[in-house]
Image (tube, rainbow, N blue to C red):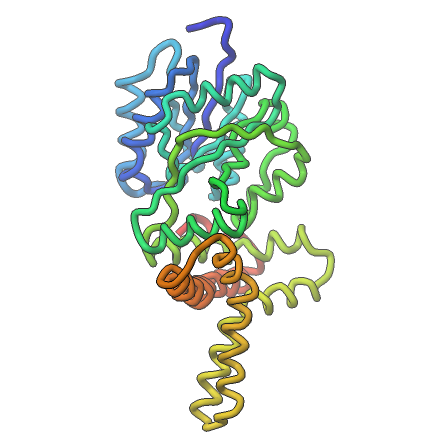
Length: 332
C-alpha cells in the first residue's frame, strides 16, 4: 500500500445485478489507483449477485484493494439506493467516497479513479465525471440522447454524484425515503460546485420496456416524498402532475372525441399534444442537428416515453397514495 496516497472508498448499491457484477468488478480492479476499498450494499438480491461479490472478494482482496459486501437487511427494514449509499458511506474507511451504480463500466478507462484523485490533490472536495453512454438498444440510445441534448447541451453526460470528501457525506446523508431525484435533493443541500473530470467510463441506461417499467414504478412510488420537500404548496403538486401527464391527457381526449364523433375537437387535441412535444423537446433535437429519419425516431421515442413510461410512473404514484406515501420495500 502506498502510504502517500489516501484510501478512496467506492460505494455501490446493488440488487439483482449478477449480469453486470463481473464486468463492474473487472473495471474496478483494473484501476491504476491504489489503495481502493469497494463496498457493495445489497438490497435483498434473489439472483447470484451476492455470491459473485463474495467470490471476487476471496479472489482479489489484498492490502491495497479490498471488496466488502454489506446487506441492507442488517441495518433495518428500509430498502432504497439512497439508504444503501448511506450504509456504505457510514461504513467506509476512505478519506474520499465515490458513488457508482452497477450500470457503470470502468474497464474502458483504467485511470478514471486516478483522475478523480488528482482533482482532490488539487483542492477539490466534490468531483463529477463525464462518461460515455452505451447505446445497445433503441430505448437505451434514446435515453442517452435525452441526457446529452436536454440536460448537457450536446456534451457528454456527467455523473454529478461521483466523489466527495468523506466529511461532506457523513454530515449530509442522503434522504433514504427518496428514489425520485434523491441525487438532486442531496446535491442541493450540499451546495458544492464540482470539479468536472473527463473520463472514458461507460454507462448503461435501461435497455428494455421491463427496465423502464421497473425504473418508472420506483420513481413514481417516491415522487410524492420528493414533492413534499421540493414544493411548499399542494397546488404545485397538482400543477406538476398535470403538466407531466399532458401528453397522455391530450391523446386520451383525442381518442375519446374521435369515438364520440366530435371531429373538430379530436384533431385539435392531437395537434396540441404534438405541439407540446415539439415545443418542449423536439425543437432542441433539431437545434442539435438531428434531421429526417432521426427526427422521426425521436418523435416515436418521445411518444413512447410520455405515454408508456409516464403510465408506469403514474401507477407508482397511485401505489404510493394507497400506501399513504410510505416507501414500498424493494426497487422492483
